[in-house]
Length: 435
Image 1 (cartoon, rainbow, N blue to C red):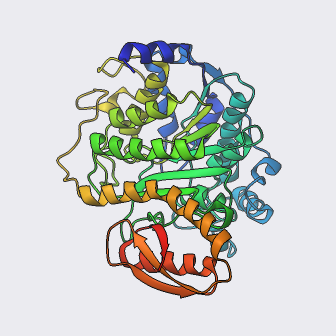
Image 2: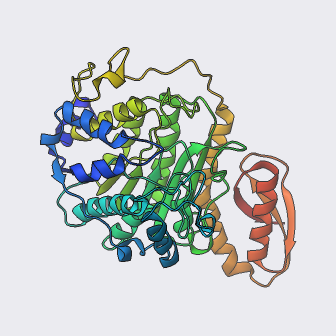
Image 3: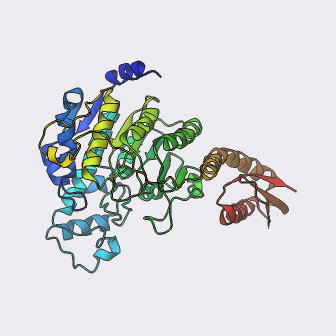
């Protein structure tokens, strides 16, 4: 697609932007990213992007709406301690509240506001008021059903997906945050109706410690979780190459009807996480790849701890959705001084080395592409071989020495074969051959 064709298509795209002064004020209270919501909105406004979108006032989520995913006991406890900021309640630790999810007065109101904003964005898509809906203050993908985790008190991404599922049979979740989208993957790990795709840093000791390539879902959801583990230093071109290779396969196999995309900005060069070496241009290319599918798409924020760079990134992505080109010079506005010393919209990569080995990335991509062959062979073998004791050879994508396994049932063979291959070389088996 040419630049002109992209701009023509983008200019016709109806975009809903979830915003109200009260919502931004509430989101600014989050202690880990204070005033970030205001910085993002102010820069979007300063660049004159608001008139090109439908600005939608968010609704506050009710207890019942948040209970679509979270347990009543968790929500009731969060509500109780939120009223007086009680950080000494002994039950709080059972709900993940403490060190990285501190209890502060009004935290339940914050959770309800963020959850409600994402539900509002999803409702705009369901009502066909727009093709793309944006909630940059959302994207808190670590929260679990019954506990807070990783600065996340409510999993608004899960709530948004459940809302989209009211109309759309298959919803695709795409997560390009630095951290693995563990809370969303766990929420849908047993279903084939939601596919989760996460590209993230995977390294010993790095939070949350999940998301290896061999983590592919459970039960009916087996093979519907796709994880792309990456190392430090990856830059735009290589990231986009991996992203498109995986997403082409995902779209072909899953055929989604709607997309929810989490666009955490902690992958940016200059972020305090000091990991990836991305710029908004690279993330925008990934976003455009998804937008060209012309499906209902909900965009959320997420991580991003260099506040100025996060605002730069999400403003650039907003302009990308709208097909607008922005001036390099940051406009004068309330937070102008935060963008010094260059006062430029661009983010330049650092000299951080790229530690992603090409062969490893090729193997990860090949593994993801080989999953469909695993599924097809599994179905055939179940029909042909149940109850017959045979020797199986596990043929791995990496070409290592095959592993021999035995078992009276094909389900046992498959389980043993997967375990042996994953433990030795992290590959998902491509096929199983009778010997």
